[in-house]
Length: 138
Image (cartoon, rainbow, N blue to C red; front, side):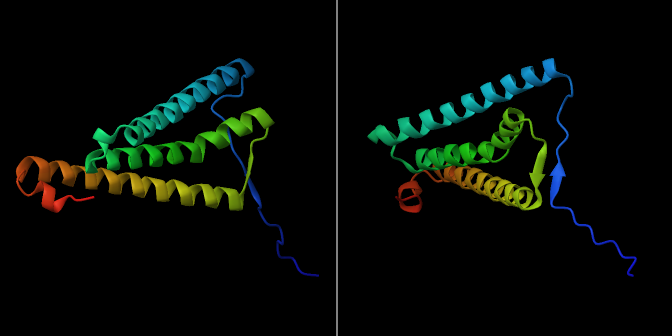
């Protein structure tokens, strides 16, 4: 008979912000309002940039991509928090946790990259205005 431990962990238990039902309701409502405001605001930015032909410049192209990445970034984590509250479940599978962490890191990296490109765009526009149209093309 072997005395080695053969158990394995397939899920994590997520501890919430509060165990009191009144505070959980308030936190769920707060997260839902912030999530809806983030998604709707960013989608309005994307729609405004795509419909107005005057905004089809490199800076607004980067801004619309930044808004899309922001929607994906916030959807990566907040949707799981809201789903856990609705389903009254505090568990997340190991594979789901790894997937969530992967997308969180990918969207954080994309966010930082887009901010760096937008900073370079503004640098060229301010410091080299005559070269801007040749360096920043469609």
